[in-house]
Image 1: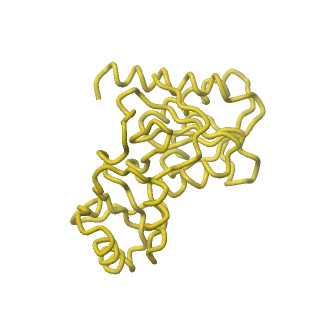
Image 2: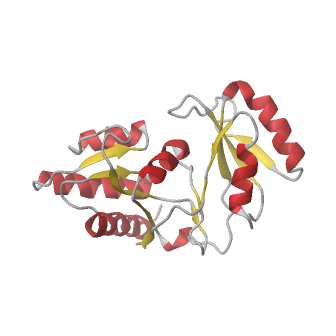
Image 3: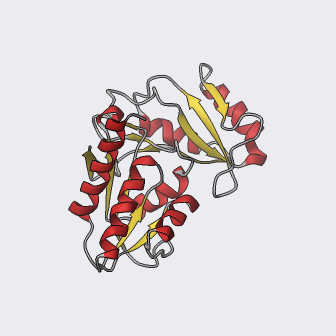
Length: 217
Protein backbone atom coordinates (compact mmCIF):
# COMPACT_ATOMS: atom_id res chain seq x y z
CA UNK A 1 0.00 0.00 0.00
CA UNK A 2 1.42 3.38 -1.03
CA UNK A 3 1.36 6.48 1.20
CA UNK A 4 -1.26 8.03 -1.10
CA UNK A 5 -3.45 4.91 -0.73
CA UNK A 6 -3.15 5.16 3.02
CA UNK A 7 -3.99 8.88 3.00
CA UNK A 8 -7.01 8.22 0.80
CA UNK A 9 -8.32 5.51 3.10
CA UNK A 10 -7.84 7.75 6.11
CA UNK A 11 -9.65 10.62 4.40
CA UNK A 12 -12.59 8.40 3.45
CA UNK A 13 -12.88 6.81 6.88
CA UNK A 14 -12.73 10.10 8.74
CA UNK A 15 -15.14 11.84 6.34
CA UNK A 16 -17.76 9.10 6.65
CA UNK A 17 -17.69 9.22 10.44
CA UNK A 18 -17.90 13.01 10.57
CA UNK A 19 -20.70 13.10 7.98
CA UNK A 20 -22.91 10.26 9.23
CA UNK A 21 -22.18 9.47 12.88
CA UNK A 22 -24.11 11.45 15.48
CA UNK A 23 -23.47 11.73 19.20
CA UNK A 24 -25.57 9.31 21.23
CA UNK A 25 -26.05 6.67 18.51
CA UNK A 26 -25.14 3.09 17.81
CA UNK A 27 -23.16 2.40 14.65
CA UNK A 28 -21.76 -0.59 12.79
CA UNK A 29 -18.03 -0.71 12.16
CA UNK A 30 -16.51 -2.81 9.39
CA UNK A 31 -13.36 -4.83 8.96
CA UNK A 32 -10.31 -3.99 6.87
CA UNK A 33 -7.74 -1.31 6.18
CA UNK A 34 -10.18 1.47 5.23
CA UNK A 35 -12.64 0.68 8.02
CA UNK A 36 -9.69 0.93 10.44
CA UNK A 37 -9.67 4.69 9.99
CA UNK A 38 -13.38 4.94 10.70
CA UNK A 39 -12.72 3.09 13.97
CA UNK A 40 -9.85 5.45 14.73
CA UNK A 41 -12.03 8.52 14.14
CA UNK A 42 -14.88 7.19 16.28
CA UNK A 43 -12.37 6.61 19.08
CA UNK A 44 -11.21 10.22 18.82
CA UNK A 45 -14.75 11.52 19.07
CA UNK A 46 -15.51 9.35 22.09
CA UNK A 47 -12.31 10.57 23.73
CA UNK A 48 -13.61 14.12 23.16
CA UNK A 49 -16.76 13.31 25.14
CA UNK A 50 -19.30 11.92 22.68
CA UNK A 51 -21.50 8.93 23.56
CA UNK A 52 -21.21 6.41 20.71
CA UNK A 53 -21.44 2.62 20.83
CA UNK A 54 -20.65 0.17 18.05
CA UNK A 55 -21.51 -3.24 16.67
CA UNK A 56 -18.31 -4.89 15.41
CA UNK A 57 -18.23 -7.01 12.25
CA UNK A 58 -15.33 -9.19 13.37
CA UNK A 59 -13.25 -10.19 16.35
CA UNK A 60 -10.44 -8.05 14.94
CA UNK A 61 -12.68 -4.99 14.75
CA UNK A 62 -13.92 -5.63 18.27
CA UNK A 63 -10.31 -5.69 19.46
CA UNK A 64 -9.51 -2.41 17.65
CA UNK A 65 -12.60 -0.79 19.16
CA UNK A 66 -11.63 -1.81 22.68
CA UNK A 67 -8.10 -0.48 22.13
CA UNK A 68 -9.57 2.89 21.12
CA UNK A 69 -12.20 3.07 23.84
CA UNK A 70 -15.22 2.36 21.63
CA UNK A 71 -17.92 0.48 23.62
CA UNK A 72 -19.24 -2.67 21.92
CA UNK A 73 -22.83 -3.94 21.90
CA UNK A 74 -24.35 -7.01 20.27
CA UNK A 75 -26.27 -7.12 17.01
CA UNK A 76 -29.62 -5.30 17.43
CA UNK A 77 -29.10 -4.65 21.14
CA UNK A 78 -29.66 -1.13 19.90
CA UNK A 79 -30.85 0.17 16.55
CA UNK A 80 -27.88 0.69 14.23
CA UNK A 81 -28.16 4.16 12.72
CA UNK A 82 -25.34 3.73 10.24
CA UNK A 83 -22.82 1.03 9.33
CA UNK A 84 -19.48 2.05 7.81
CA UNK A 85 -17.34 -0.48 5.97
CA UNK A 86 -14.96 -0.88 3.06
CA UNK A 87 -15.29 -2.87 -0.15
CA UNK A 88 -13.05 -4.84 -2.51
CA UNK A 89 -14.93 -3.74 -5.64
CA UNK A 90 -17.69 -1.19 -6.27
CA UNK A 91 -19.75 -1.33 -9.47
CA UNK A 92 -21.50 1.72 -11.00
CA UNK A 93 -24.84 0.64 -9.45
CA UNK A 94 -23.09 0.26 -6.07
CA UNK A 95 -23.18 -3.52 -6.09
CA UNK A 96 -20.16 -4.69 -4.13
CA UNK A 97 -17.72 -7.51 -3.69
CA UNK A 98 -16.68 -7.75 -0.05
CA UNK A 99 -14.98 -10.34 2.11
CA UNK A 100 -11.31 -9.87 1.35
CA UNK A 101 -10.81 -9.54 5.09
CA UNK A 102 -12.76 -12.72 5.80
CA UNK A 103 -15.69 -11.10 7.65
CA UNK A 104 -18.32 -11.08 4.89
CA UNK A 105 -21.09 -12.89 6.83
CA UNK A 106 -21.01 -10.52 9.81
CA UNK A 107 -20.46 -7.51 7.57
CA UNK A 108 -23.61 -8.35 5.61
CA UNK A 109 -25.58 -8.96 8.82
CA UNK A 110 -24.65 -5.52 10.14
CA UNK A 111 -25.34 -3.84 6.78
CA UNK A 112 -28.79 -5.45 6.66
CA UNK A 113 -29.61 -4.28 10.18
CA UNK A 114 -28.42 -0.69 9.74
CA UNK A 115 -30.69 2.17 8.72
CA UNK A 116 -27.90 3.34 6.42
CA UNK A 117 -24.90 1.50 4.99
CA UNK A 118 -21.98 3.69 3.93
CA UNK A 119 -18.99 2.35 2.02
CA UNK A 120 -15.56 3.95 2.40
CA UNK A 121 -12.96 3.35 -0.30
CA UNK A 122 -10.36 4.79 -2.60
CA UNK A 123 -11.10 5.36 -6.31
CA UNK A 124 -9.09 2.22 -7.14
CA UNK A 125 -12.03 0.14 -5.88
CA UNK A 126 -14.38 1.49 -8.57
CA UNK A 127 -14.84 -0.97 -11.43
CA UNK A 128 -17.08 -1.06 -14.53
CA UNK A 129 -18.21 -4.60 -13.67
CA UNK A 130 -17.57 -6.85 -10.67
CA UNK A 131 -15.34 -9.88 -10.96
CA UNK A 132 -11.67 -8.99 -11.27
CA UNK A 133 -11.40 -9.49 -7.49
CA UNK A 134 -12.16 -13.13 -6.58
CA UNK A 135 -15.56 -13.54 -4.96
CA UNK A 136 -15.31 -14.80 -1.36
CA UNK A 137 -17.87 -17.49 -0.51
CA UNK A 138 -18.19 -18.66 3.10
CA UNK A 139 -19.03 -22.35 3.47
CA UNK A 140 -19.54 -24.95 6.20
CA UNK A 141 -16.32 -27.06 6.26
CA UNK A 142 -18.12 -30.41 6.39
CA UNK A 143 -19.98 -29.59 3.18
CA UNK A 144 -16.95 -28.44 1.19
CA UNK A 145 -16.76 -31.47 -1.17
CA UNK A 146 -20.44 -31.09 -2.03
CA UNK A 147 -20.20 -27.32 -2.44
CA UNK A 148 -17.20 -27.65 -4.75
CA UNK A 149 -18.96 -30.29 -6.85
CA UNK A 150 -22.14 -28.26 -7.22
CA UNK A 151 -20.35 -25.00 -7.96
CA UNK A 152 -18.26 -26.65 -10.69
CA UNK A 153 -21.35 -28.26 -12.18
CA UNK A 154 -23.17 -24.95 -12.31
CA UNK A 155 -20.15 -22.90 -13.43
CA UNK A 156 -17.77 -25.13 -15.42
CA UNK A 157 -15.28 -22.31 -16.05
CA UNK A 158 -14.98 -21.31 -12.39
CA UNK A 159 -11.56 -21.22 -10.70
CA UNK A 160 -11.85 -21.96 -6.98
CA UNK A 161 -9.11 -21.58 -4.38
CA UNK A 162 -9.70 -22.44 -0.74
CA UNK A 163 -8.29 -19.53 1.21
CA UNK A 164 -5.30 -20.61 3.25
CA UNK A 165 -4.47 -23.54 0.91
CA UNK A 166 -2.65 -26.10 3.12
CA UNK A 167 -3.89 -24.55 6.36
CA UNK A 168 -7.46 -23.36 5.75
CA UNK A 169 -8.50 -19.87 6.72
CA UNK A 170 -11.12 -20.12 9.47
CA UNK A 171 -13.68 -17.33 9.78
CA UNK A 172 -14.92 -15.96 13.11
CA UNK A 173 -17.92 -18.27 12.56
CA UNK A 174 -15.74 -21.39 12.27
CA UNK A 175 -16.24 -21.71 8.50
CA UNK A 176 -14.01 -21.82 5.41
CA UNK A 177 -13.78 -19.27 2.61
CA UNK A 178 -13.53 -20.16 -1.06
CA UNK A 179 -12.12 -17.44 -3.32
CA UNK A 180 -13.95 -17.90 -6.61
CA UNK A 181 -13.00 -16.45 -9.99
CA UNK A 182 -16.14 -16.25 -12.11
CA UNK A 183 -14.84 -13.68 -14.57
CA UNK A 184 -17.06 -10.67 -15.22
CA UNK A 185 -20.15 -10.79 -12.97
CA UNK A 186 -22.82 -9.11 -15.08
CA UNK A 187 -25.73 -10.14 -12.84
CA UNK A 188 -24.44 -10.12 -9.26
CA UNK A 189 -27.85 -10.51 -7.60
CA UNK A 190 -28.59 -13.60 -9.69
CA UNK A 191 -25.21 -15.13 -8.88
CA UNK A 192 -25.65 -14.47 -5.16
CA UNK A 193 -29.08 -16.12 -5.18
CA UNK A 194 -27.76 -19.11 -7.14
CA UNK A 195 -24.86 -19.69 -4.76
CA UNK A 196 -27.09 -19.55 -1.70
CA UNK A 197 -29.19 -22.42 -3.05
CA UNK A 198 -26.18 -24.75 -2.64
CA UNK A 199 -26.41 -26.56 0.69
CA UNK A 200 -23.36 -25.60 2.72
CA UNK A 201 -22.95 -22.07 1.36
CA UNK A 202 -23.37 -19.65 4.25
CA UNK A 203 -23.02 -16.38 2.32
CA UNK A 204 -21.29 -14.83 -0.65
CA UNK A 205 -19.40 -11.55 -0.75
CA UNK A 206 -21.87 -10.00 -3.20
CA UNK A 207 -23.73 -7.06 -1.65
CA UNK A 208 -26.61 -5.77 -3.79
CA UNK A 209 -29.16 -3.07 -2.95
CA UNK A 210 -27.66 -2.26 0.45
CA UNK A 211 -25.49 0.81 -0.09
CA UNK A 212 -26.81 4.27 0.75
CA UNK A 213 -23.63 6.21 0.01
CA UNK A 214 -20.03 5.74 -1.09
CA UNK A 215 -17.35 8.02 0.37
CA UNK A 216 -14.11 8.10 -1.64
CA UNK A 217 -10.77 9.27 -0.30
